[in-house]
Length: 261
Image 1: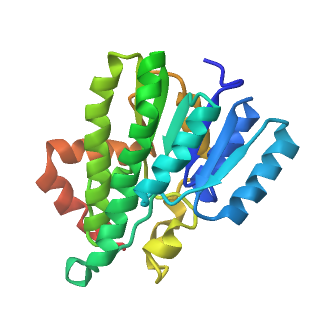
Image 2 (image 1 turned 60 degrees about the vertical axis):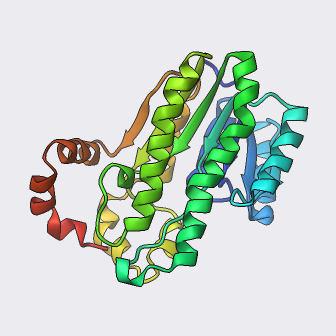
């Protein structure tokens, strides 16, 4: 289905994958609605989209971990537009061994990656149910399928996202709403400036990292279609499928690679 004239709300849109998805949506005639904490970046991206692609581009400052703010911002949006696609892209991770886990950091990760995602979904879901159409896209991770050392909390949040998404998909189908999980491997964005302050992980896996533009195109290709999952790269998804069948074997042969963080 054409995205022309469709309103696509993207959280975490002030940089990285969210920014690239916004450009790709606009390129195809869709109307991006940008949500993130960094208002200065949102304004810059919005102006670039309007100047380059000639489509409107609204933006609102939003910290998705603030449930009251989520309700306020989405109520304002829903009074003004019909939301055709919601992309729950906001999220962050921090790589630590279990003995070094910071519990406040853990709460923050769950607040953004899981609770914020669910809150945003709830705000658009009833309108989509009433219209009997719409698309909710949740950006999870290959880490939600196969956990590795130093990513226990981050992987736990993405396992939660996949669990929520799989349940929602079955519930939403009866209303004609599509639900898609996006499971990328490591993407070359500023995500790792927070996740891995040492820079070691990026050095170890840089040659295998995905480009944000490539992932953005795949996600936008899936919009308004009944795509269950977008998995990238393909070889990593094969590994996660093998892990489901032969977990001990995969952990044994992949041990050295898993400790690259």
